[in-house]
Image (cartoon, rainbow over the protein chains, first blue to last red):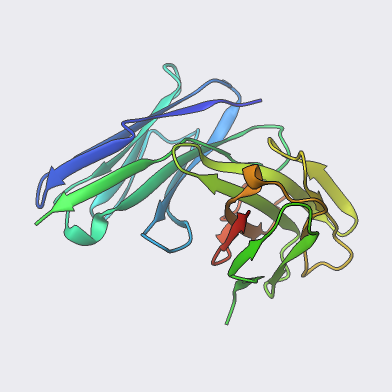
Length: 114
Length: 115
């Protein structure tokens, strides 16, 4: 099956700085890459996603980039705020796999210091 | 309100005592799934279901059972819990597209401790 690696496992930044989380995947047939945010004590929630026919997608302060050749994708958060502090999970869905079958990375604990 | 609910939210039990964690969604989603979350290991899928009476194993199915008799419910059964099943459990659901992926909605989580 698909294997998703996520780095770093922890990330601390000063408020206002940018944060970047990187993921690699093993299955070249993967074609959908969502990112979930999990605040302390809460459930994971989708914040942004990208499909394999797109190289970059932005939504206000967050963006995701995809490099299919290198099989990696990244989450970029600009102008970080304390409320961005959370665990972030990347995931991949291989084309042809059971629809909905997510393969998650191990997560990145992001801490934004005021 | 569209939501995924889980019960109980917290449970402390002893080794070998059968338990069931319920999951219900009111969004008419075909796909439902169970994950366990452990520190440093992320979210690992236990079982999933594409529709009523259709279930399949995820990455860590040992020690768990599921059933999908109704579209809205997907209970997780631990017939003989062991301490290594102490974890935070999430149920999730989504629509199933013909050739596309849809957002998974997670329940609030169930924190299980097996003594």
